[in-house]
Amino acid sequence: MSKSNDKPQNGTFQTGRVLLLSMCHFIHDVYSSFLAPLLPFIIEKFSLSLTQAGLLSTIMQIPALLNPFIGKLADRMSVRYFIILAPMLTAVPMSLLGLAPHYGVLMILLFFTGISVSLFHVPAPVMVYRVAGSKTGRGMSFYMTGGELARTVGPIIIIAVVSILGFDGYYPVMFFGIIASLVMFIKFKDIPLAVNHRETPSIRRTCLEMKGLLGPLAAIVLFRGFMHASMSTFLPLYIIQKTNDIWLAGISLSVFEAAGVAGIMTVGTLSDRFGRKKMLLFCLVLAPISLLLFINSSGWLQFPLLMLTGFSLPSTTPVMLAMVQEFSEDGSSSANGVFMMISFLARSAVVVLVGFVADQIGLEKTYILCATVGFLGIPFVLKIEKPGGGN
Image (cartoon, rainbow, N blue to C red; front, side, top):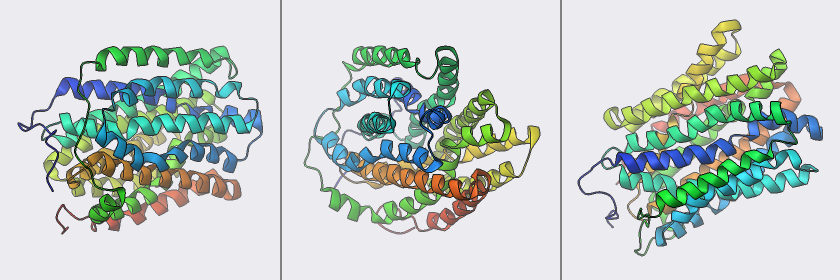
């Protein structure tokens, strides 16, 4: 089997197209980032436990079960409209959470959001791989930076809007997502985004061929997921419990995400030079240590430690995305779909577990437990195989 010939033969990094995909990632993920900062309002309105709050994130992840099939579809057709419609399809349900009359409607809105998230995130990294030339790590860093920037400004945006319009009245923000889809239609209409028209391997065959990579990455994603769930989902609630300051909660999440932007840009790019496994190992060692120090610190010292945690925790994603694309021989959308399914489902299952544990022992002890579990992912870096076998 040979690689798809859609990869540029001259290895040129197509900056304009990479930046365009990064911008679309930014617009889309601004809306999908609303859930965490809105959780305190949702919990108060519907009198939810932390387990029920965590389940909302899981509901949003359930459509990830479809990711391998979306990947197969992306291998056979142009996925331009997946990208174009994603901002609108995510913006509408995420803007209606404040109008939900009961918990069941919340779950329906988040389920439809999850479908849109899958439609965007499965094919987009494959497109980045096609236009990044020989700089796959750099391309994934640019792409992931769009998402991390969105999660940086998203909490501040939604907290500001809710402060002005109220939780029940922030729904007009959906119109920016609708406009973004119209702009994307204009920008993408002349870009050929069909990925691969050849016969592609089955999902089962893809999994078997890539088990030497997907197995260790699945374990890493699972153990890293405990830290990620505690920070990305429950950080605003943790800060509110500590300080009773909603603005500080939103700012803290934005600080965490902003540090993630720096980490993603740095680590993904450096992995092109120093190797994927070395940079992955570096981040998996640094993240739990910095999280433990953050929990056990106070005052101004917490912010640099929060930034260090943010720098190291999300920055593993572009490295793993680059590994998946470089390992796959055929049907890279299918390979990415399988990895994204593993990633989303592991993270969503962990969120419910973290919420349940926090209900029993409190958020602070739960944070310590999550950081400790994070160390378990380190040995699996050594088990990652290179294409063709071997470590």
